[in-house]
Length: 268
Image 1 (cartoon, rainbow, N blue to C red):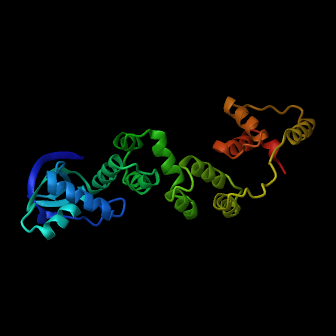
Image 2: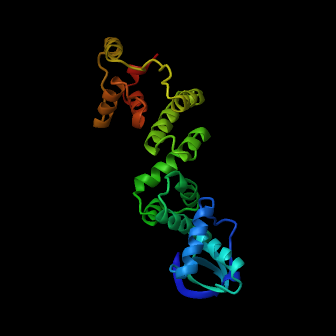
Image 3: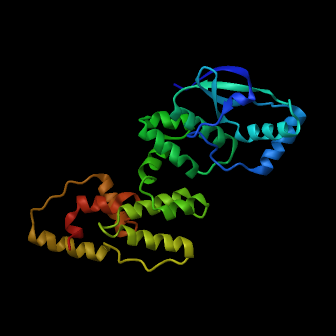
């Protein structure tokens, strides 16, 4: 369990960097220089966060730019900051990874994609969705969407998302469309959708699977062949039917729901 053990004043040489806990963005040299000037003038106003895995063994969790700024100061000023203020935390390594991301996200305007790997990692480490949501101050549905869409996300779409070329809302929509593509057609659908994003030119759309006239014709023939046919449907089935008829079959699994509730409408 993640806890703060104490606040301490430790030798700077005692603070190490763990191979599985890293700053979630590359160090910004201008930011390091800014921190160096501020710390040299005003001191370290906010303690670094370190993980004490074993007694006296400290790994950096939060404060990568500030620690590098202090090291920069020490190069020009031997003897400065031989010891520094730290907040000592305890827990498992997966909790440290999560805390590292949270600290950086709280400090920066983090993109949603910067949460992906940590959320997936912690989910695979058996963190419950409610625990993840509470830790990151997000909703459970936000966590569930990452777990649902990210593992199978097309790498090209992930790059576009990382580069802010597409929003998370749009990326989720594209992921749904790819997941709902007919078997064997997933890559073709992904190619088309990603090409549209890159070029800005909508590709030719495939024929709609169901139109009002087509649905009427198919259902009429089906009833003629099966006059005693009965359908038991839910309200969501009707909503999905209306969405498919309006051309929005790829949103929220509408086509799959219609295929299950009204098989006769989509028979070849």
